[in-house]
Amino acid sequence: MAGTAVLGRLTWKAAKVVDVVVETRHVKTITFDVPDWPGHRAGQHVDIRLTAEDGYQAERSYSIASAPDGSHLGLTVVRIDDGEVSPYLTDELRPGDRIELRGPIGGYFVWEPAQGGPLLLVAGGSGIAPLMAMIRLRAAAKSDAQTRLLFSSRSWDDIIYREELDRLNGGGLRVVNVLTDRQPPGWTGYGRRVDAEMLAEVGPSPSERPRVYVCGPTPFVEAVAEALVRLGHDPRAIKTERFGPTGG
Amino acid sequence: MDAGMLDGNAVAGLLQEVFAVEVTTATGTCAACGAAGAMGATHVYRGAGFVMRCPHCDNPLVKIVRGDDRLWIDLSGMRTLEVAV
Image 1 (cartoon, rainbow over the protein chains, first blue to last red):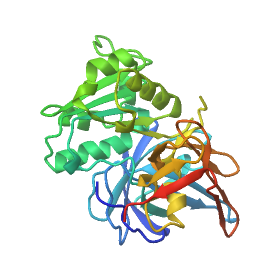
Image 2 (spheres, one colour; image 1 turned 90 degrees about the vertical axis):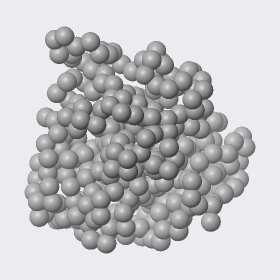
Image 3 (cartoon, chains in turn cyan, yellow; image 1 turned 90 degrees about the horizontal axis):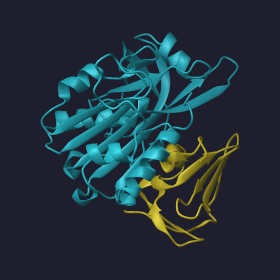
């Protein structure tokens, strides 16, 4: 990995909404244009700040789901019904609107094509977002890094980026969906929570020394990271991004 | 397990407000157990402020509290911070 870059102070920027896409019933992807955006690395996040008329401010972090692409970046947001920030982002934002954003942030949960593979990506729900940035970058950079994605969703209709993942599946990328709550008729895939047995079946073995990225709700990440260590994966090769109980 | 636990990544933005380098890729050494690891791998708990704990022994490495116009950062739980330059 390159030396830690000197970043300078993090400042808030005005980001303009250029596109809003419905992903699933509760999830939208909002694409922003950010003037002077320095570019980002796959796995990084941004902070978003909303300011009410009375001056009250709420901040949330969102992973960047898009591959690096000039001044554009895509955030995939789950609507939390009693959340302070997500209902505004998913219900109110329209192309042309502006919000405050700062980033890119973080260098730990990051993958670069030059790092190669094999990769084991494990996502729970919207935890797919930073891993999708890696998968998209892998495709854009024509990386041949062997990559397995184990993606846990509640049901078929809750699979975020389902069609795109289906298109990208194949070659060196293997996408394995897990449906924990409801499975469609004829479903032959996994229909339980991610466990050690599943990780052993899907993932490269510890002897292949995969780079492992796990993202999702905290209990999901805890269970997966624990199972991976039990299977013999090097804890230092397992990078985690927990987003707490709900997000917001 | 605390369902609200986060990773060092979660405070990367906060730390980037004051440090000129990306702190989550820096290596911190715990003053209690001596384990060294990436700050991004620490366990982060959020309350009135943030506490970054050693993933090996749970010792609080860094405590961060934000006031109206300042950040208060307690580094007493950490022996060293090693930064690539």
